[in-house]
Length: 403
Ligand code: ATP
Ligand code: MG
Image 1 (cartoon, helix red, strand yellow):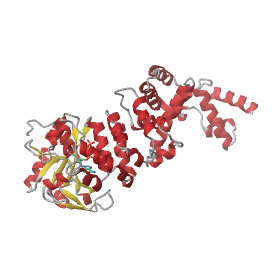
Image 2: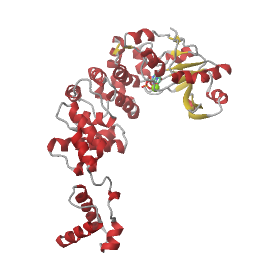
Image 3: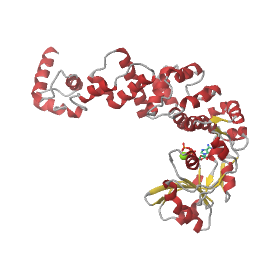
Image 4: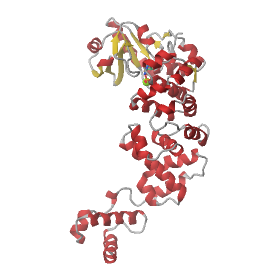
């Protein structure tokens, strides 16, 4: 198959292929970008594979960054763009189901394509638009099937992450999984325990935030793969509930929202610990917790100005969106109106601070000062106190009298 017109991202990268070829090496576009052109999907990355070894690649271009020389990857900066150029390689002797014990650079494209995970990810494209397809990936693209390159069992034994990637691609591409490939995913799912949590997280997170997440998650449940993922052992019922509790064709707007929806359905005794088990960042854990808290508040009582001030607009919207996803009543406009009418958005907007209270109003430094400042902040946000020095002074005199 030959493409007559390449998308502009690839057109712009053609001079890179040419430079490598002029230096006497082979170079092709590979990976997800090629797949996405053929599917007419938005392109994320333009990845290039080459027969030149990393040092050779570096000598061809004037501006490069070493981003993974041991894997053969050099970042090339050309015309204000960045391109990852990776040497053709094979991966040998996987002893622990997760990382090749040795990466060998090779001069042959065929060898490189063989080690790729799925046939639709094992296509290459040359500078003339010619598609190189050794594993019938074009046919699989046409019938929307995910099929392992070579013998599926072996491929999942080599690197069990490919099992997670299988569920993830089903979700992001809206593809079915070819039968033998799926059977091998089921029989090898236990190997997911050997995979680093960080790598599993990336794939599971991409699955949850994909348009067809229900399809991918359904496959993951069918394969009982959840039993080998952090905090998800024995959670089939909750995971199925997640699929059924969310209205059709709803896709999550952000990772944190998806994880909050997940946590609402499965059994989690401690949200922070569950998310820590997935080695997520503190910021990530915080936002998921905030979405859950706001969701709970919204269910139990009227939302106040303080809630909008404290959790912020984005968390409120993400949480309200979950109500919509759950087919509950929702009102984005009402939340927006509360947010827009806030008198301050940050405690630095308050016209007094600790040192002002000490210097001008004779307050004593110490924990009580923090308590007073907090009271002032709440009172201002709730509209009970004007953000004005005199008003605050009078408020404090009253407070101090009472206290
Ligand atoms: P996306 O559009 O989500 O980035 P992608 O196909 O580009 O999808 P990447 O994770 O960016 O996925 O990987 C780029 C390419 O590298 C894949 O298309 C595949 O050919 C190969 N690849 C990546 N991870 C693996 C793996 N674990 N085993 C085999 N091949 C892999
Ligand atoms: Mg990619």
